[in-house]
Length: 355
Image (tube, rainbow, N blue to C red):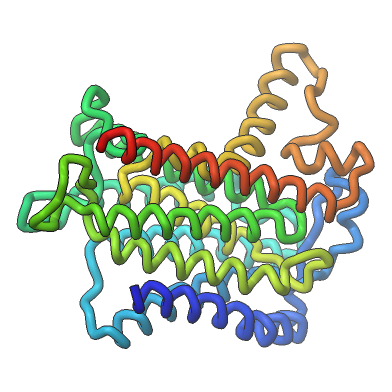
């Protein structure tokens, strides 16, 4: 538990203190955000705000993980390396996208197919790697079953079916986080809540792990839950610390560097804790916002030009209705909090019922 708390504290301090210097550096270099012309007009005042703040989040999480293991003199685990690898590599894709926007002074970065291809390559590497490194019991970091609160025995996909499933999850969560990052502090605050919730899930899975000699019938077949709890709290702390600077009016944006890496972390935790469908509940706000985009596109095509919302993603619809940005963010945080509580309630209720 000490290493978990240490990682959360270092992640928090890393972004709380480090972002200040990142802002100074980015402002000095002139690395500011370019705003889409077709977005809400109120966003034009944000033009020039430093971006690529996700670099600080990534660096803080990696520092927190390393420091926690050095302090307790423990070795990294396969699950943690896979989670951090996906988190960092998707952040690198986002950084490339942000850098192109800045260097070419435009609001569009990588071409859509290039960005998607890079995300797919990273997802494939993560998916295949998740079925390597079996432990002494033959347990690999990921499972070939679809999971909710634990593996669903009647939804066995086979190895290659599971690889495809994981690739789809990575693509879905990375883009969901990217779509949610539309208002000051919205994605950062929501992600902090989700990661904190998964810290609780991971700790519970560790305490009730099937690897213990006295494990009961309701134990969890999850690889390295303690290390995943460490990563979850490091992520929660880093996002919470970054929120100090990212809250309205934002002094810095995380950019695609941050949103894609956060999405990758969501996907990794859902796969490696074998709670893929539970993540849909816990991170319900991200799902709702992504669904608004899907519905908008579908409705536009079905009705040949009509719009279901004034603008998608959903947060911009409420902006155009006249809601203040801070009001939208806080109300969406409340929705996220309710989703987190519902997810944790389901997770605990399943364990209680099985006793």
